Image (cartoon, rainbow over all chains, first blue to last red; front, side):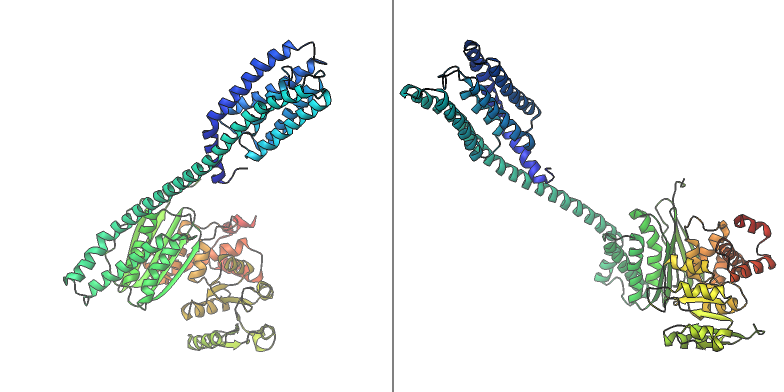
Length: 377
Length: 222
């Protein structure tokens, strides 16, 4: 129901803020019911017609307070689906009580429900806007007024008794309702603040994580790219030297691979290989890339090992290269064949990755193979 | 087949492809006579095309709609078909092999594969180009034939290098042995697939040449 995290936060904040107020109102309502209403019922027992109806009405209100007590203990607000039936129970209890009230007793000590029902109603409607409270109080007061007009000889004393009684009966719960309404406003802004704080914290965590990754990637470049750039800047390395140019091509391919590593694509290995191949393609090398089979998503260190040698070969190739990948669930074999002459290739570091180089003349054929270390079922 | 003289008919909607293939065929040793069906299947069934030893067939005359039906009719009539097509999905390639095409070549595979494929097909033998080798080695269909470790190794190397000399040198075997392994794979595939005339020919031939024994056939014939 409250799937939206903002609504969930707001409900939680409101429950937290109003919990003390709820305890106070619950205590008042319960004390009124047991310490004022119960003795009054007992005292007027023989006057009610019949008396057991008062007991039913009393039990109904006590039941609503019981539910509230359970909700307070659990720190929860009234579920929306229960609220209106509960209000119905309160109104019904009042009507029942009036129906068994003897003639001429409206707003007297025996009319216990006149003062009590408003508190129980307040308990149920506490989280609702002020106008809902006003409507409920109005309804209750209307029922009481109708009862007075119907069951009492309306004279000056009775009307005055009803009017003075109404001030307390309506006034005190209304004060509480106004307080609760103020709390609602506070809860809303508190929830908004909390939501914003959480958003900021999440954004900060994400930024810290991407910063960490960027630093990691920078560290990877630091080992190989930086010395090359420094050498070129200081003039120690000659751009005309074929070895330097080869190094530059390899570093360019590594950087391309690095950029490709952050892309979210279905087949990362192939995606990264394509980027490596493009570096050769730009140099005018004719590159054929063919892949067959399906393999699982491999972790970054394995992918790096699988692409490192092909990347070096591709960056060094003179005029043509053939890159092929063939794989299955527990084996991936990346092959590159090119006219790049003999090369010193870095050994793979990840477990399960093997490199095999085979050269004849200018042709070099390198196979890097990953094999799952645990045999499949 | 009249001695060493091979005739082939090409069905392809790209004039440049037909012209290029004609050039390769003329330079083949011995030269292959090429008939251009001008993208019309009728020219394969009637006239000089009907007598050609080999049909070079572009599977996607209509792009995106592989003509498996035409391929099936050709094979059922005992024609020897080399499928010469765009780079295709593994499923399409395997289906062609299962329907009985003797070779499946992609258009990035040039005369060094097409000419031997035509020659092999004319003699009723299958030809497996590197890309088809890749498809076969990566085939994960549960009904695929079981390949030996060595056959897998050879196919993978053939796909990677597209040179039998390199495969032989790397695996330290002879080129002849490389060929044998690749042919055995095709016979195994022909064996599990639909019975077609060219397929039974393929199997009979493999038995004659001693590529397989009757015991091998028992594996999947049951």
